[in-house]
Length: 82
Image 1: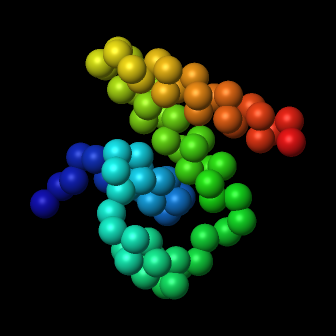
Image 2 (image 1 turned 60 degrees about the vertical axis):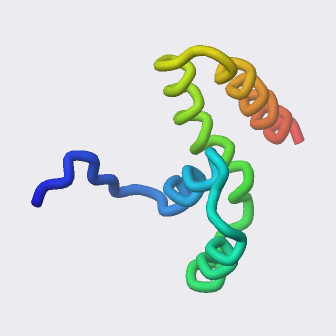
């Protein structure tokens, strides 16, 4: 079998994607963190990883994704400024 969408990258990118559109139960994330603790700064990286998907949805579907992308960008910029 061949998977045309195979991905090899930062595990946090996949975890961030699970949180973008509702997420899983809290016990999933608790078990994940117990097995694979997250490094400091994950919330910021989550926003950055998910920005890609929001921009992609903006490109494909327009609508409210523009405001969501703008909020994410503003949040990331504010965090950079400290």
